[in-house]
Image (cartoon, rainbow, N blue to C red; front, side):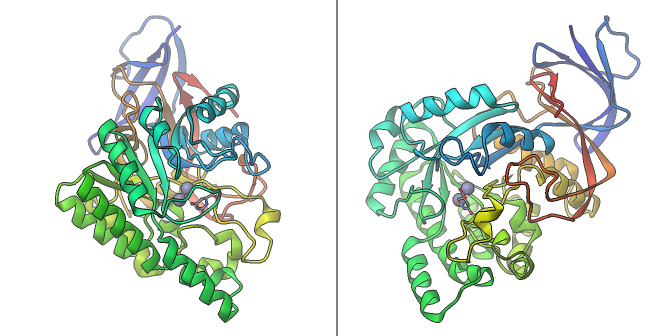
Length: 425
Ligand code: DOR
Ligand code: ZN
Ligand code: ZN
């Protein structure tokens, strides 16, 4: 039987129009004026809520397989739904890493049993899996870590990088990079240890602007030579944004994302949050945060993705050098973005582009990211007026903490539909 989402507001350009949206067999079947008679079907009254395409978080670490104490796919996908995210694209730094067709298939076996949202996988590039990169099917991108972070995926050899970029070019696959320069990073770590730096407020001095800018510049140089599609993950610096803006002006196949934590927090957050605000790349200065927002306004930034990287409280409570990097985010992205819309930092239309339409387009999810007849019925109903307070201990993510705890955000997630079916938690 068809389902009708009656009395909802749907965005056309910048305008919100009252509509009834008919869902059938997992797709958007029709978008009708209010009052138009339809054959008997299940009717859901949306009470003038705003219906958006489901958010697509193109950068999550759901920890399956190998670190299920931090997150598993049940808790991760519940967190996604709670946050209005209907599709996630998961990173390969698992244990074992997702760097072979076999590992990919094993991961999929577990995930397909547990997931209550749609998903796709990034595929890890390692120092010795060129053959796999040449033939693996059904992936969103090749993920390259240019600087070390959680897990053991790391590529520092220039020749190796060029080979990976070349396979990507030949197969028309996006290379998504974690851009931090390993050599500079190691130098900074050594001198930080000499100086006795031992808390999270130093993290942005170690994982500095220069560390990110150097790796982005190198990745862009290589992209220019090879001509592949290059996506820079989680840009956190003014310098990074400027380099990417210049490359895009040359018409190159370059895109980038920023995370909510880099948009809504700066390095001073470490004073209160300590390791709970430790992530890679680090939080930067207020001037950097402003530059990211300029990048959002002028189109340099293509996507917002969370880099949802849960770690347990116990792990985060360890001393600075031992505490792992990463913060959860999939559950709070849309709330933060709605709050930003209310504060007029950007339009709701731009939020939809950044968090749904653009990630779908970049990673080849052709049937997602728009409310249009024939598209997948992945939808989120929101209320822009109702406030939501983020609370530690009340989250779906297994780690059950957030760097945004106690933030009162104007906006709420009311209902979520995945492939035409309402998902209730
Ligand atoms: O902070 C981070 N955490 N950055 C990464 O690159 C990896 C991630 C994780 O998996 O914990
Ligand atoms: Zn990363
Ligand atoms: Zn990540």
